[in-house]
Length: 590
Image (tube, rainbow, N blue to C red; front, side, top):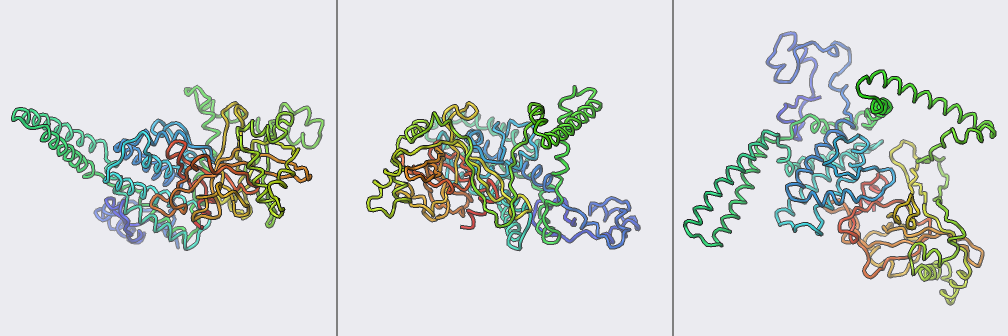
């Protein structure tokens, strides 16, 4: 694409584009020296002979192999080396393995360093969570050694580097761009190159690492000789301790010098992303050139290979793929027959697989969308507030509902609490364990597209035989009046959305005949600045003291799934605002 030399690929410096006329002249003149210096083979390129064709402008970067399976995998190796050097791998693995559910985002819970192969889908999910997990690992205080002042500075620089590269990658996946987003891409790439030297030692080759190990062994032998001499000369314990500290600093400095000396970032994929902003300005979104769609079509063949005996594999792959294709076609035929005749549908009920529920909703402009309750509990088990409180272990549920009704339904009455208790007298209740929420989907081209997120609040052993589940959610609290103890600290600097854990979902029909759709949540308090404009690019939340934050809210106030990455166990969480583009834009636009 440009005339950048091999030894400058890792630098953010622009070079003139390649000129086909110049190379054609050199080939005709057999100028092997200039061709070699510019990295061009001494053969005629067929594209040089085509009229109005500029060969260097035909190249389009592939996001999948350049960023997702390229630079992002390099970044993960740098992070692994950085964490290992600073003894933070256990903290990273702990945060990684405890990542909570997030709709549409799959991350393997096995430790990243134990994964032998990672697919493009998994790497795209890792892109959404790596900054938050890296943040949590470096800031964790439980079961980890307190970092020194120099380590804290290095941690900040490493977080900034990861922040800028991941944000650049997220912006590059936008389906449409403006001058602002392209400007952000240029800014993030510039900042990444400014901070990337913090990972330079982890780019060392095996040969360089071998030389560093040799230097370390030589220093060990030298220090042993010094210790023998110090003992012979009668050195004091303080002198020996001071000498040991000096030796440790000298070892760290010399080993780092060896590792950095021959390390570099001069590989083509890190240089290619420098041209992305210009390509987007001229040709539009990079997703139109991605090979992700083509790679998806390989899945059926890969599955057929896994089912083969790996010896006589080619005939077995063809046979297995053909069989799967034939069965799929027959299933479509039977599904079509079943829709035409109810009698056939009943006979084929055990043969035709039920259609998978849609995960995306596309509606005409101006159409209202609603949240949907799912997972209805048995009426004979849950029929009043006492049963709901017992089933979901919320002893103060009745008091919270009375306070909510007093603040939001009976606020015009002379005695709000008495009026609320009158409405709730003999109220019938139906509990649910799941809520479907349409959230704007920016991964598709349609303007009125929504992805369907599911949040759950389950009793013990109710959902797939697992422990009780309380998903984290975003709650819009501007339209409600809540108890002061429920929202103190939630609203500081960020008025629109707060995070919390969903405790239960239920509908309540009062003595006045009205049906109320409600949820009980435990709101979390912002710790520090709720706007994610700090060096980490993320915000932190924590639990209220003495069990505060529990309240009842309108069902429609729940706006989506919140992705909270554990920082300190059961006390602090990082709000991962890179879980999807909708949350990212909402939090940064505040």
